[in-house]
Amino acid sequence: QVQLVQSGGGSVQAGGSLKLSCAASGFTLNDYCISWFRQVPGKEREGVARIARDGITTYADSVKGRFTISKNNAQDIVFLIMNRLTPNDTAMYYCAAEPPVRPVYGGRFICKTEYRHYNSWGQGTQVTVSS
Image (cartoon, rainbow, N blue to C red):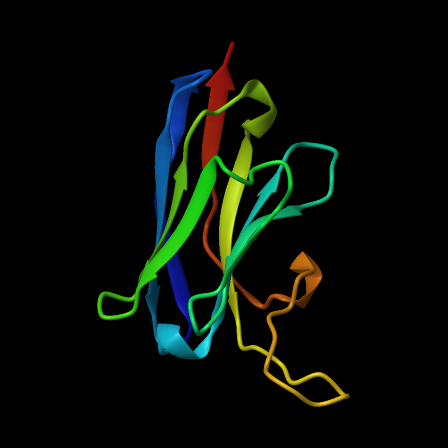
């Protein structure tokens, strides 16, 4: 059974940093894509960062250069380090796991990008950035 347990988050002033963790169990981390999403009330869940099986990372434009996603396969844990936080980063943050898929045209496996295509989720953790 795929399980994701989040920790970290909290409140910080603008310009500060926070670290989120997502501990995985019930599956081999190296076989999955792991994504971080965030959501504010009244808005759709948006992708923040993603790490593929081979360690390739992808970031939303709004967090590029400030957030870093990484993973430790041996410890089955994924991190999201968030630097230079702004009030716009205030949201509930979720980690999610999903196996990669092979495109119909062939080629390498790729990670899904839409939150609705992810079936395994962490419990969520609140990040609040004050100005």
